[in-house]
Image (cartoon, rainbow, N blue to C red; front, side):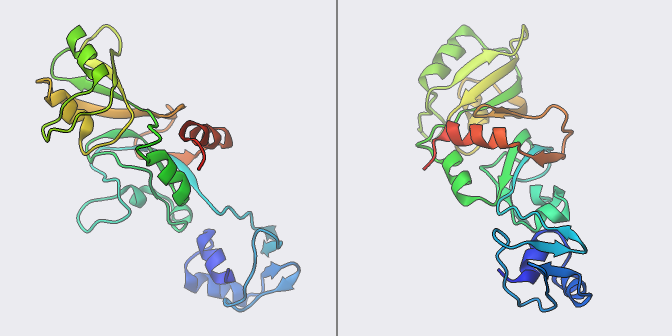
Length: 239
């Protein structure tokens, strides 16, 4: 990997800023000063020092975001603000992308990564990774709703969903928890519409065994812990 690309991807500034840094002679690889951005290095085997501090290289980034309303799950858009726009520059330069998607007006747990295999494994329909949502409905659910959801719901296009687990959140039958194992377009909203109900508010709270961090405010994010990453891999089954 070129040293200028490595430094830019590690949050040391733009290519122009990295070029200035190299000219200062403060970048070393295994003790050798590097001044050319074209110099090739292997961050996994070489000791890279910048101004006396060792560069800790991470090939992949794994993030947990509490997605706010009004932001779309995409890497770029000409009209709307995207989840990538919420990232700090040192994370954005790693080119992460959303793992799956949440609708524009849906909030809650969204994973982002630049690990394509990780993302594919979690979103593959064959893996049936469960996703749990909290929702506020226009009216309460019934025992019949719970039974129908457990067998699968026919959507407006004729598609029958996989079985889902529906239950009341507490005593209020209009506040519910729903666990599904797929992610069709507007699926949760369409499932309730098929039962003559309407979703007024929707929040994803869990993917696999990983719950959203309650300390994250809307629009905030953090790195996934090693334990959380491992739990997601185990949930989906490594390929």
